[in-house]
Image 1 (cartoon, rainbow, N blue to C red):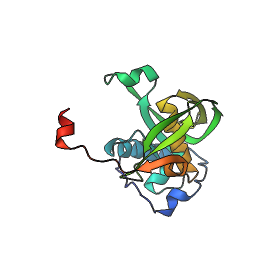
Image 2 (image 1 turned 120 degrees about the vertical axis):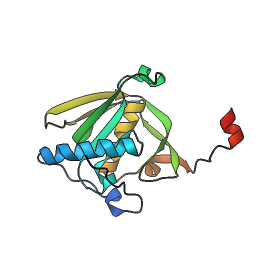
Image 3 (image 1 turned 45 degrees about the horizontal axis):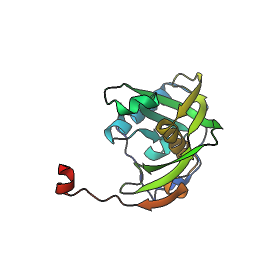
Image 4 (image 1 turned 60 degrees about the vertical axis):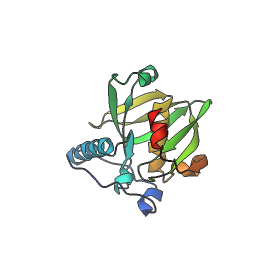
Length: 173
């Protein structure tokens, strides 16, 4: 496995619509392993191929499978690797949340996303998968799939800002 360099704005690959992957082979499986390692090292909860300079429709996500596990730090996280992911169903209900991005360091924004989604694509072995996600996990999938379409979170944000570092006094509380 190899750590990949995460590209940042204004790299043009981040604004391009990524191309579909036609064959899931050892090279793609190796790329998935590299992306998971890079995401963890960053650290992040998701990574799309354009974020490492590749205009391919591939994402990796690592998060809690169930919403109720988010409160338990000891709960296991699951890794999803999805080739050619697409949103096939979205809830009418939406939620506001604060997002950041490894490709846009130093900024966060308030983004409205669907509360629940269904994602379809291929797994690391080229087999069809369908993933139902809600809450924060649904947000992560939407954020990463946006990357494949050249859309970044500030494009959808109602407000974007630079988070302030906590002072030493604030950290004590």
